[in-house]
Length: 155
Image (tube, rainbow, N blue to C red; front, side, top):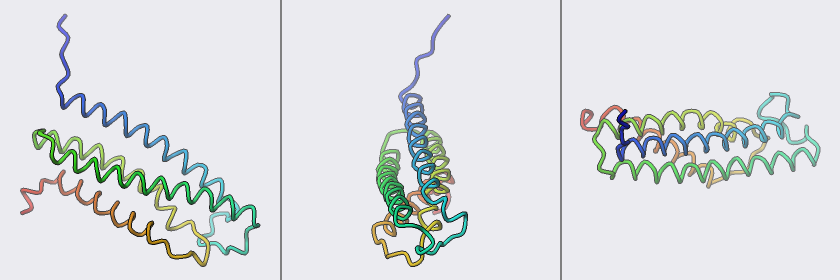
């Protein structure tokens, strides 16, 4: 029996897959905590801050900040990762596979992070850092999609 030795790309793909699964578990845990903290709104969004007790609003704020911070951190890491994929010496088809993994994760994570924009009280104070992270996340997502489609074919 001969055992095949994984290529550098195969190791990178498996490493990315493993890492994204761990990140997804973290995202789901933060989502679960956030959903629990906003349960008092009973699915009515945006909700009136006056409809919640001070303790409920404090818990909501704590879990929203945690989800927001996770979103900001994930976005920064995803941006770095897309740049790393771009400069690595992988073949174009290999890069597309990595971008596909990344984009799959981003699509799932986006549905969780969207709660930061939809499950909110009225009025919600302006959050420039969240706005910047949201714009950056969208740019990284578009970049990954373009690379999967093949930028060379679009130019």
